Image 1 (spheres, rainbow, N blue to C red):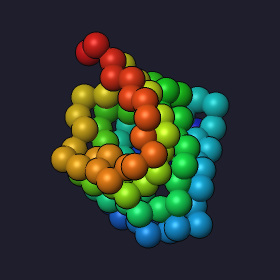
Image 2 (image 1 turned 30 degrees about the horizontal axis):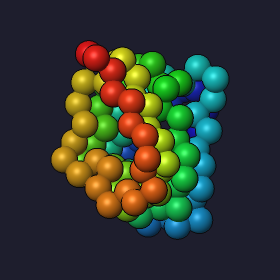
Image 3 (image 1 turned 120 degrees about the vertical axis):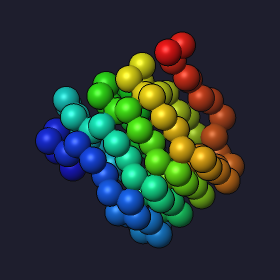
Length: 98
C-alpha cells in the first residue's frame, strides 16, 4: 500500500475474501483504520507493530478475519466495538500499557 497511506476508509476491503496480506511499507504513516475496513476478508496477517502512528481501529474493522496474532503499537488510543469479533484463529494479543 505504501508508506504515505494515513487512513484506510470504512468498508475499503470488506468482503474481499482473496485478500490474504497487506504490506504497509517500511515506515507507514497509517493513523486510522475505518469501520469494517477489513471485515470478512481472507486476511491472515497484519503487522500492527510497524504502525507507530496508528491511533484508531474502527468498529468491526477486522470482524470475521482470521488473524493469529495481534501486537498493538503504543500509539493506539481507540479500538472500536467488535474490532476483532469472530476471529477464531486469534491466539495472542499484545496490548501496550498505555
